[in-house]
Length: 310
Image 1 (cartoon, rainbow, N blue to C red):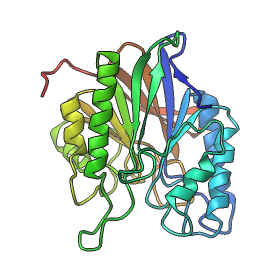
Image 2 (cartoon, one colour):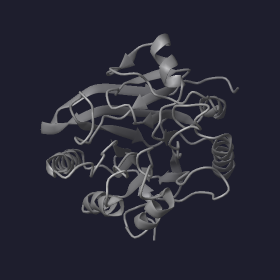
Image 3 (tube, rainbow, N blue to C red):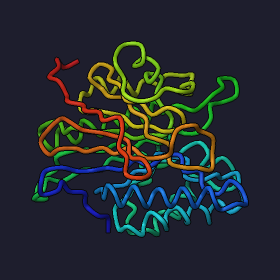
């Protein structure tokens, strides 16, 4: 049975976003051990209501991809906290498929991820509701989208969130609005950043680091426009670019990176995780980066403005 998500008695809900763990790339265990130790420390310090992993949990190119994926899930599961996952480009690059990863995942009681509609692109397009503190009604939404892996060679670069997935998002948004007779504040999670992650740097203030190229797809499939038109998503959260961890607001939508968590991969930033705190009945979230030793940096607040319907 799937575990319900619920706001705390004080009306808050906390998410820890882990990203780019890259478990299992070489024969040495030290980098992976450091990653698992850091995950322990961050979860102990933050004690979230939900753990979200935004892709590249493993190096599927290495031998033992299924075993390494179980290592990750075994470790996260020990906290008895619900977790949700979207896949990254390295998770199924070789030796294992997304379908096989999801079948492994289904064995874990704390996994609340869903495979999603089979008729659209990707494995893991789904929405989760967060219930009121009394558990009587839904008060917030979390969207998860599979941003794919690599684009066809004639296009190059990374895959995009396809138009059928964008259509699914719009359909889900309207479904929940009709069901609840109002829009619920929402967040969206995926691995590869949208092209608009470049634009946000040019139009306003951002909090955090931009230390490498933004490797969004070469093709813009319109998810940001759909989010803008629907008007319920306050912020999006990606991974993929290990030396970027910024948040910035574009047209009242916060576009955020997580903070790289894994040690077995490139990146100059100190490893950590992004923490997100929602508030029941409010179109607002707070966020910060949690690092080893209990240090928190780059505090960020998003408060939705009243805007005209598009």
